[in-house]
Image 1 (tube, one colour):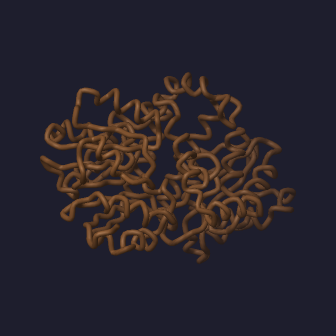
Image 2 (tube, rainbow, N blue to C red):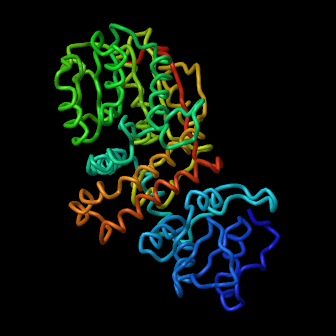
Image 3 (cartoon, one colour):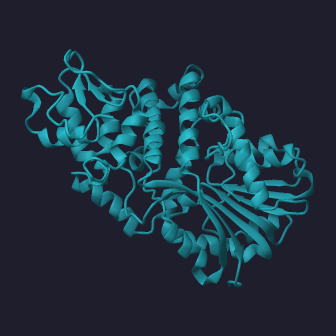
Length: 425
């Protein structure tokens, strides 16, 4: 990285006008904002290289909307960057030399963007959040098949002992499921409630490990596409059940439909976020009501280092609108509410998510030619003009997140295990 002291390097005098302070602030984090054709400038892989005449527009959108403005101008092809993940990391990490905090911890210079996010935090619109999340998972299945790998697991893998190569993605995902199978002590006779079953990764794992025949598996999701996929894929498994079911509602009805009264194990694999932080105590209360006293609860969640009323502007607009991620203290309060659960283990696996995201982007780029026709078929229902804009949107999402998590200053990934405590009504 460049020294934070070289603030006068890299820019001709004519551009040091309206955005002088912003350019210097970016440069203090090692980021140049260049224009194509500037022969005296040496671009690093994480630099922003704008089309000729577009630097002011890119900077204007960046200053006003932060990552939303940066992402929108990238989608439109106004700038390029060899390593967006490195750029994102620079934006979110501490500047140790200048002892300054990340640039993106400043509020966007847009009152409407701030008000929009705060309103959705102030009002409890969790059902709207779930509807928006559903649209994300209802994208063409071929998209997810193209970048998730054979496991079709859309959550963090476990890269312990593995080389950080995309080819190890499936092994990393299997190791993550190994961890949870051990943590939950899955065994014959269990009744497992999988809150966010996705495309059936966990039940497939259970079958491959000779556990699926002697237990009852109940998977819920907020995506009708995922329900249909799983029901078709596991139609020969009479003890596997899949439902489109809100995380907020009682589970007693779907348990009755599945021929059971109580569950022994419950897991949320990066899905409790969609329920809304304010609703977490009630969501876990519904789980506690149907869990045996000897049961085990597992939660793996995208989280934050501290409570925050807003989420990243780009993710909020294009990926999970009106979403938010919780801190350890917020999750802890939800578990402790009504003394319904006792937490006995927690760990942070944020480094594993960085490698998972990079692997996803690798396969997304590699398999884009087979993904693109399915995006073309639904492009009119998106805010993008064509499939190439959609592609740039998706790669910006994956690489932005990669850098955010690698910086380690905000977003985290937590694994937590808990056991039932007091009974709840």
